[in-house]
Amino acid sequence: DNGQKKIKVFNAAISDRNPGMLKWEFVQRVTALAEEHTGRFTYVPPPFLAEIEKKYHRNVMGYNESLTVLLTGASRSGKSAMVNALAHRLGLPIYNLNLKGSFLADGGIDKLFSRKAIQHRPVLVHIEEFSTVFKETVVHRLDAAGELEKKFEGMHASSSLHCSDFLKLFDQAGTTSPKHILFVLTCIALPESFEQIPEFKPLLNHGRIHHFHLDCPTHEDLRKYLLQHRISKEEREGVQEAQAAEISRDLETMTRTLGAEASRNWHAV
Image (tube, rainbow, N blue to C red; front, side):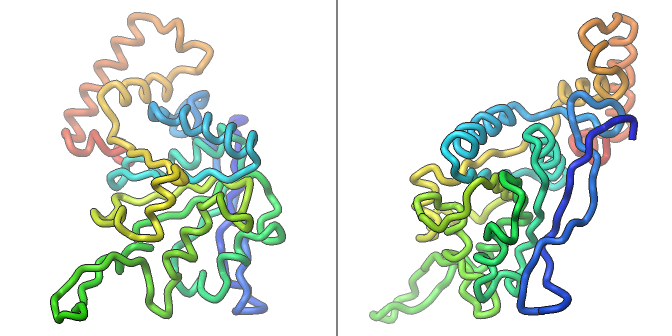
């Protein structure tokens, strides 16, 4: 592995011995994505990554609370890669949570985030496709006068997790809220009406959830990536003119080969 650091990854799972119980299972160690690496494991951080780190050190390490970051961005814009890079920079294992209602119903929240369940503290909990918690957001119904009205709610189906039960994870005002966790919520985009959900308003108003949008890579991002991909960290400051010219030529070739749209996709690059 060329000395590149690894990150422990755990997934939420249903216990084999007791189907009514939830647990975290160790899955694998993955290679960290980092600026100091070369080759396919190098990483070009977005400008707000340092801001998230600062908030983490203040809230989690300083105030002994948890921190919730909401990360949106187009498909393949690098959301999962950023989770990996952030875990590496902060020295945290990753706990992945899939938002399936059957997983989290009937007290699943308390079981999953108890000190007994997650013994690593602090820890990064990655909740993918966060927007699915709002999939039943807009509800139309008749009011007392027989007029059609629109109400904004979370998930209320009996087989799903109630929106307020889920969102209370991130409200550090509660004495029972789990501590020493960096929650990273990722999704492509949130429904336009999500800010009108009653349970969500207090979290937004009190800054409990910090929203960042991950843009597609720019031409400069791609240039940095090629530079880091080929040249070790120690040698990047003194890149020779010929090397810089070669990287610029290869970048132009790559852009022409992939096309404008694919060049804005980290997976294609």
